Image 1: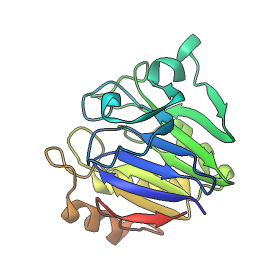
Image 2 (image 1 turned 60 degrees about the horizontal axis):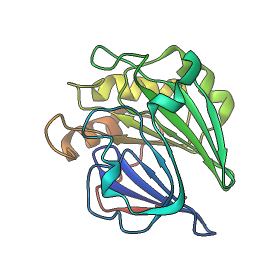
Image 3 (image 1 turned 90 degrees about the horizontal axis):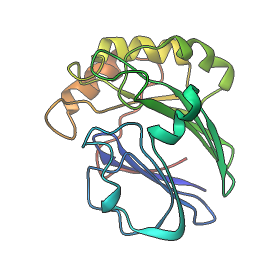
Length: 198
């Protein structure tokens, strides 16, 4: 069974049952010593793109917003039985031409990493994807606040909706996370350092 470690801010590590390792938006935490097969970067702000922190296998594939948006479209990738779909992400601080979210499918589980964003038109298509997890920013400064994030959770229809990027200054705000969880459907709280089985 795959496991996901929430490292803080918008940083994650997934380890598949067969040992495949994926990092998303490396920045927070220090658990980057397990070599990566795949690294995903939603955009180039410093708190999302510290690729140099990550140990890498020789064949490690790095997909940043550049590759995800190459050709002016949101691209898809298939690597080591992991399917990655780039999706829309944008707000007043994050131009749609420079930012993406990712839907990652690993071992049959679909996980939405929203990146830095507000509500997008594409979210209206997500219910048909039957997402297992949606990780949504809710800091209310660089991104939507917890109320809009909860509204997005209702649109997306994932089985588990998890608040992340919950503070503009710190890697985590339990206050904002709890505020989201109080009004969002199927909310789930994961704190930095928590690891869950997917």
